[in-house]
Every structure is written in C-alpha cells, then in structure tokens.
Amino acid sequence: MRCRQAGPHAAWRRGTGGTTSIAAFLVERSEQADELRQSSPFAGALDPRERCRPASAARFSSTGSARPRDRRSWRRRNSIGRTERRFSLVVALVIVGTVLAGAPGAQAVVCPGPLEQVLPALPVEGDPLVISACIYIDGIGGATAASINGDQIDLPVSAYINTQFGFFPVIFEWSLPPLPAGTYTLNFNINGFPYPLPSALTVRPRTGSLGLFDGRFRVTVAAQQPGASPTAVQLSNSGGYYTYFNPEDVEITVKMVDGRQVNGRFWVSIASMTDTPFTASIVDTSVPGCLAAASCPTRTYTNPSRRNQNFIDVNAF
Image 1 (cartoon, one colour):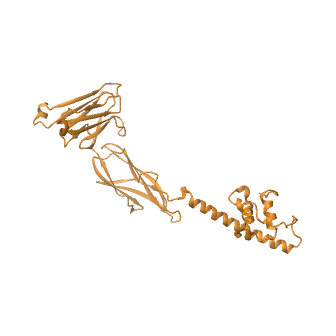
Image 2 (cartoon, one colour):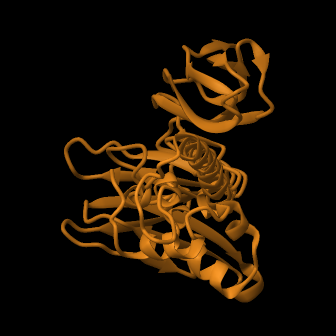
Image 3 (cartoon, rainbow, N blue to C red):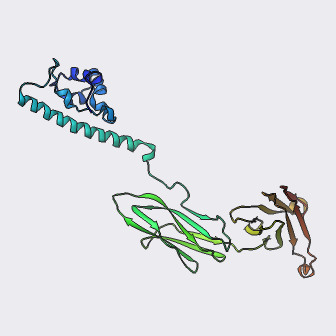
C-alpha cells in the first residue's frame, strides 16, 4: 500500500527536510516535533491504512526532487529507511502491548461463576447429577469419567501441560448416576495430582414427608394431577419444599415457627408456586399413642385446581 503524496505525510517530508534524522523528531520536545509526530507514518502504526513506509519520506529532499543521483547516497538513505521501518514496528508492538496490558479484559482472568456447582442444587436420592468446576490449568485438558468409591467421588482432569500458555480458568463437567442418600466428598485432580478444591456433596433421602421440629410434626403433600409425584426436600429443622415433576422446580414450600412465646401456638406457613391442586397435611405426633390410634392432631390445607393459594395459620397447634 502506497502513501498518498498529500496530507499528513507531506508535512512530514517538509518538516524532516529529507536528510534530517527521523529519530530526532521522536525524542525532541518542541511543538513542531510534536506536530510532526502526530502526522508521521509512526502515528498510524496501529492503523493498516497508515502503515506506509517511513523510507518514502527519506527519498525526497527539501526541494521535492526524487531519487538522488548519487547511488551511494541513495543506498545510505534507503538503509536509514529500513532502520526506521524496524523501529516503527518495535514502537507499534510496544504500544499494542501497553494498550492490552492496561485494558480491563487483560486483567487477571477469573472464573466466570462459582468454583463448583451441582445440578440439581439440592439433590435427592435417585436424581442424576451434573457437577461442574472451574479449574485453573496451564495447558489444555478435558474431564474424564468420574469414579465413586464409597463416600469418595473422584473427578479427574486429563490435561496437556504447557507452561507457555500460562494459567487460565477452564470449566469442566462430570455426569454422575443417581446416588444413595448420604454425604460425599468430591476430590478433584489433574493428571492424578490433587487439585485444592475440596467439597462435600449431600444427597437427601427421597421421601414424601417432612419431619419438622425433630420429627414432632410430620408434613405430607398429595397432588391431584396425573404424573405429579410430590417429593419432599427438607432444608432445616423447621422447613422444606416439595417438587412434583422436575427435581429442580420447587412447587410449594412449608415452614413452621414456634410462636408459643407470642400466642402459645405453633405457626404454619405454606407458599404455593403452582396452580396444581394439592392437599398438605401436618400431623402433631407429640401425643403418646396417637399414631397407632390415628388420633393425632392434624391440620389440612387444600389448594383447588387452577388456583394459586398460600396459607398462613398462626393458630395451627
């Protein structure tokens, strides 16, 4: 690509006077030198349209004549041009490196999300699991098959290490079969070497009831819709939630509060996220022998079809 004969390069040629050292204008602090630097081929080193050879400026004298008659003089000036071209490339690389180093995207790369993630977030026995982890490696690699030994789950990564790449985060995923209820330890490793990301996985038992306040209150839900299979997931000693179809979709939540210091009663709160008809029953098993006699105090809450209804009962038990 050739330089245009007019425009900023013409000012460059007139200012340099043909034989004046180009390097002098790169270090001189005068106003004229600043102006020439902004209009010189070096100022456009990062723009492909401005990558004109600086040697073209050295081929002209102050009178605008073309190639000098003295071949030796021309060769000397052409050599200066080649030197200045190399210098412009170095300047361009330094500028590019400085811009990239100062750009926000060039800061230390971090994991885009959590270091590890389990789906579903609160797994129940019988749920297939997907475990993902963000691991820093200095190379390329991929997740290999997970192995389960008792309560230890090994999640290996096979990697090709190349220190020239530098460390950067990679998200790996492992699929696990349904696990029995219990607590498991996740062990990540790269090429057999442990990776410092210890984690525990808790799989809750699949059940249709919640046992709140140390099992005193038993909560059951019956959904009157074909295909719905209410599954209870207990979150704490005072509450939990139910799923119907997908283990990742919460349908209703149940919470109990000991309000005896306020009104001498236990309170019940049920929040529904569905219009599927259901009936929630809460049984107080604290009365001796009531289970065998089917005479335990019971509260029942019914949500009709095609309605979304919540319940707050501050006089439940």
